[in-house]
Image 1 (cartoon, rainbow over the protein chains, first blue to last red):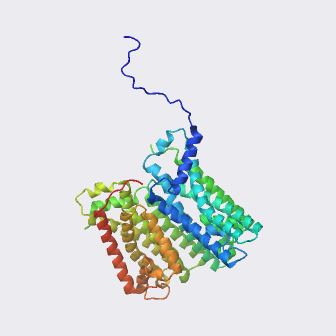
Image 2 (cartoon, rainbow over the protein chains, first blue to last red):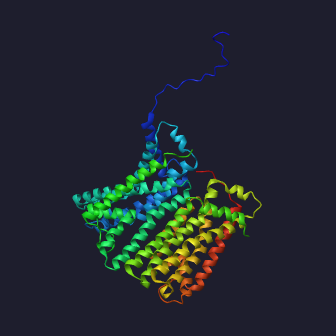
Image 3 (cartoon, each protein chain N blue to C red):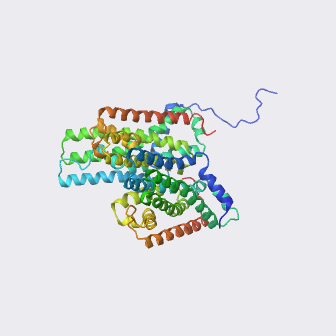
Length: 292
Length: 240
């Protein structure tokens, strides 16, 4: 046989273009997850719920601003730090509907192994998903604060006061985004069924709040203010409330104004940070062996 | 009307593996809180009524109703395995009715039993508070199951809509706008409970008993009928 003999050359060519690598893949996954959290790049139906919730968050801020401008008042009707606490139901519904969208579908349709056939590692996937969820929540919670801030400046309120309040509010919602995003993703990643994920997230974020408030009210009615302070540790939103009461100059929503001082506030902050780190660790562990 | 095999499959789908965990967590939480309150606060009829009304009936019962009601059919429609069930010579209304029975059973067991236990722990059924709220939970279980089973057949986002109904309509609007309370399963159930305890003042409802009973029956029957009709014309959509 001669050396040139070949059955058929169908002209496959090697890819010799640029390889974009791991960081690029991670960034793409982050961007896609963040867009997906608002239904962008997905069907019209899946845009409805996140957009409605985003609209509600901003609409109330616009109303507050409009009232302040028309009434020419010196302060806003609602504190920057207070806004997320008041709107917690909307935030909880957002996490409950979008966290399972973000991770449950990958698990159910077994697309996770496909992700890992790309040059990304387990840590990249978790980081991109967690980052995207936290960013989406930050957009949801910080946008109304921005509206309030711009509105307060338009109403010629004190620049220093408003900037300080706005800054404190941003720190608080950043913590809240990380905490809620982490809890939401952990619960969603534990079940490939979306419905159960939604219910579990609502139970963790909102029902725990209902339970804490009920017990706090009972403790308050028996004048046990110490207990009121410590009971706040048992639900995510009261944790955030405690941290911002202690360190960010917020007024607490605990009954009897029994928010934590600096000492108890440190415990609150440590618990929040531990929960954030913990949810990251649980997610890392969850994706160690997955979908195969 | 009742199909044992469908019932067994639904039951396994609801309580299989980890899914039962969330159904256990809420009742355990309720009983734990009740025990803690009794320990620190002693027996107090008003506190017992507040806790059972505010936490058990207002949040726990509907949430378990959402999980059981939508969970009885939602996941099957979601992953498409419902076609294997629909392809069998079983009437669609029979499927819905069987799933409704299972959902009602699960909701009752996981909501009414812990409510009774919590009531007994809180004040040993003083002034009939425990029995009243248990009756309310039983009645509410039926209506919630039928309602959320319907949501499950109509929408892929049934859980979210169910939660919006419970948290936004019943809890939020119900506490602000009194008119919203007339159209709330919770208030109808309270009206029945009010009657059972001979109206001793701790359980009260904004709706009169005849209205509540009629609305409960209408909602349950209409939701079940509509769910059966919906299942007959079900089109399986792909993932969005």
